[in-house]
Each structure stands twice: as C-alpha cells, then as structure tokens.
Length: 99
Image 1 (tube, rainbow, N blue to C red):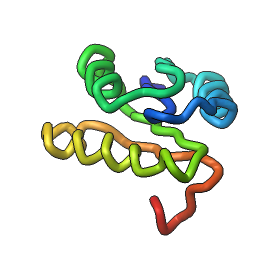
Image 2: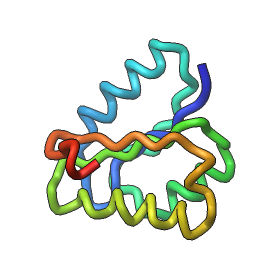
Image 3: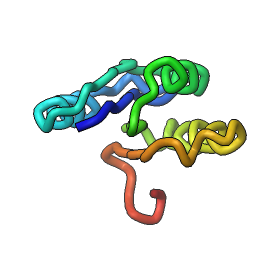
C-alpha cells in the first residue's frame, strides 16, 4: 500500500492514539515507521529523507504541543518537501478548524 512515517510531536509523550493508527495502517498493508514520542522537527525531516515514505503522520494529544505540528509542516514547506507527502494530523484535541 505504501509507507508511512508516524510520530508524536516534541513535548508530547502520549502515544495511544498514534499506536492505534499505526496498527490500522499496518493492518491495511502499509509499511509503518514509528518514531515514537517527543520528536523535534529534525527527527521528522531526517526520517523522511532516509525512509522516503508516501505519508507523514503527526500526532499530539496536548493542546500545548499542537503548535509543533505547524512547525513540522512549515519546515517541510521551507525545504520544499511538503508536496512530496500526504500529511495526516491527529490527536484528541484536534478539530476540523485546526486541521
């Protein structure tokens, strides 16, 4: 089906939702690379460059860490990498407006 890199953003140590998405994506046939929790933007960029996935999954549970999602996406734009990946954002406090 393709490859997805998935991780929880810097400052957030929650991973239950991320792990559920991991299992569903893997069950659907995706090759899933899980970076775990508390990932700064550099972890995302480095892994995207080495793994060359189709999708990037960015997770946050805390409202205080949600802005780090934007930091990751803005960095992808700065590096002209954003159009290379589908980006999934997720977490309990997220809503359509935030997306």
